[in-house]
Amino acid sequence: MSESIKKPKKNPESFSPKKPEIVNMMDEAGKSVFEKTVTESGLINFEIVKCGPYRFVGKSMYVRAGQSDEFCEFALWGPGHKWVYPKIDGMKEYATDDIHDAALIHWDKYDDKNKLMGYTIGRFMKADAPVPENMDYIYIPEGYIAKGFVYGDIDSAIKMLRDEIERDGVYKEVGGIWSAEIFPYRLTDKNKFHGFYVPCELI
Image (cartoon, rainbow, N blue to C red; front, side):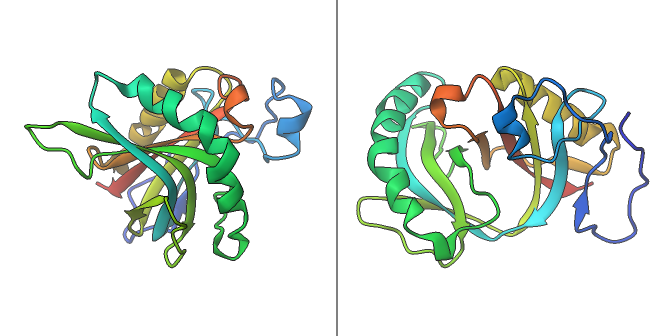
């Protein structure tokens, strides 16, 4: 059961209402990567932490929101693992604790006319990370980020994460900026175990 907390008098550095039990469904590879806790809803390793700023470094595409989202995945992920991630792997001095491959969905170029959704594959890097030639970055300011993982489909991760954010009435999601899908085991295993991040703020 998630641990109930009261609204803090000052901004907490992190918030992790967790149930300390091992998730038996994790495979051996997963056991070597994560210390596992599970919330009442079944979300794995849920936490809200203050972190950043970051540069999310990778390769971007923009499409009309809701119409061509699948094209981004098709166009970026296959080629991306051949050249985007090897370049990022060579920037170890700029790596952060968020070491997993990710897809950032962002709205920096959205307007009522064009309705552009950004899709960038890459990683959360330090704010001063250089941007390799032919690559892009999205600036992520310092702030609270809700993080959680799930064994199942990404829609389940999104719903569980949002339920956990709202459960104790301390934080709320900041929508319309960015969200991220996290893939610890490369895209080929993305339907097996993956995560979801969203920015938050104190209520």
